[in-house]
Image (cartoon, rainbow, N blue to C red):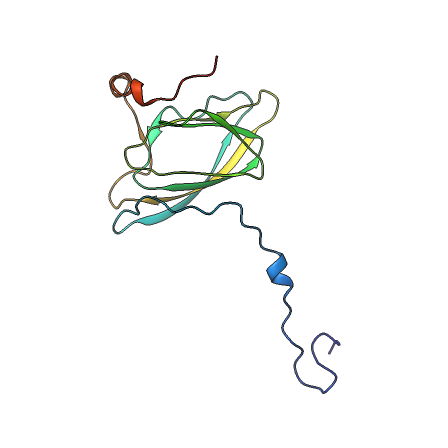
Length: 146
C-alpha cells in the first residue's frame, strides 16, 4: 500500500482534490428553450480544407459545440459570421434560427468539431433550408463581410 492510500495513522488518506484543477469551463449559456421530451445527440463533424460545410439549415433544439481542430466559419441568422478556433466553444439556439455556415475557414488544414444537440422527438436533428425561404428571410441575415 502506498503512502497516498493511508495517512500516518493507518486510516484512508484524504481524498485528492486534483480533479478540481482538471476542469476548464469553455462555455456556459442559458438556452432559450429545450424541446419537451428532447433527446441529446452528440456528433463529430469533419470538413476537409476549404470545405464550405453544411448548406444553410436549422436544428429543432439548441446545439452546443467545441472545435477540436482547425477553424470554423460560423454564421447564425442575425449574427455576423465569425471564426471559431480549436479550443473554443460555440452554441446556437435551434428552433427557427437558420445556421448559415459551419464550413472550414482554412484551405490548408482540416476542421473537426463536436456538437451536442437537444432534438425534438420525431423530428430530424438537421433540416436544410430551401432557397425560397432564404430569400424571404434575407433581411434577417447580418451584413456580409466585404
